[in-house]
Image (cartoon, rainbow, N blue to C red):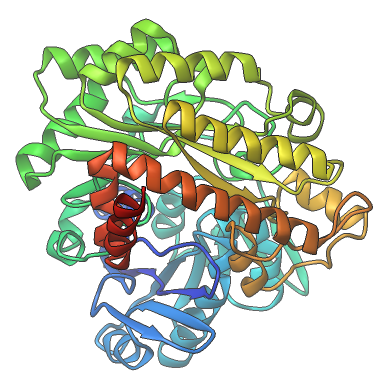
Length: 494
């Protein structure tokens, strides 16, 4: 029987890049579930196994140190090694692990999958980091690959698989899976839940309910055309979803089997089909599931209404994160191509405040075509909604990730070089990072100054918010104990 190793690499974070969070490796668990009956499959999650935090002056690496990875790899004799490439900013770690696998298991076939491989499979193959790449959803492609592995000539005919031959790269597109209910549940039995649940970084940077929690994904695909998003290349434009019954079965299984009742719905568009979404909420109520949940990946505000929000509150939602993006409707329409109305989002915010649903919001500044005035409008809106409606702001700098319309635009305008480094991507995506480009309307320094002013204003507003919201203050104090002294000082001096 074929032996398969599925690997999740460690992650490297530069100073100023996004805060680290550990997560359950859902993509590998879904792949494993689809092939475990036809091969011997094991998961090596080097993000959680032998977990360490190794800090350098410029960066920090989270996960297994290289010497332990090397030792662990030597214990196996795999025929196929699958490596997930989740984020463009982490490509360096994927390449590092791939090279190590080549050294230790020179006869093994290396296949790379995941969002970054789906977008940049040509780079991975051209530089010989993998023998094959899975492009898009991997369950059926990997099943075919394992099933036909011993008939080498047939591998090149597998849809969804990219490969390099005689200096040329070939790829045959696979249709996306229509019926998600046909997929078996993730192969949770192949990992040790203790490695995740006992780790202090478990979803720590993404959620208020990060302890004893797990992510689930109930739908795939996004029909919208936001310029900064590449999810359509990985999951397609067509919205496809599990049935409400299947979602509830999955929730109940995790609750009963693993004792976990905190969930992160990571769907890109969980509420796109409003009828389906409301049925899920109804079934949570009918089944009397006592859970806490949130949407750290975001939810479209214009897909919500008062009745649905009442059920969202009733079913244990701890926080919704909506995507406002800009404080200027013209920017939303013509630059971001968000296909939403700011006025409608503001209406939903008022309803959430009335129902006491905690809200966060994503904002993005620094798009080509945007002016400093546009960016100031977005920043002012973010601060205003925080002060008046308790909407926690998450301000980001527009980053042209490969595969996005924004990337192609910036490349064509000469604003960026082709394939910026992992460090560039890591530091550019955060508020306190560095923008990747300047335009005729603004410079990198302009964005830096705008962000600095924003952060100072937010810091002042946060003190006031903390006094009004003790749980928010406690959460911040846990992350930053020095904050307690500053809050006490503020109380005494006011």
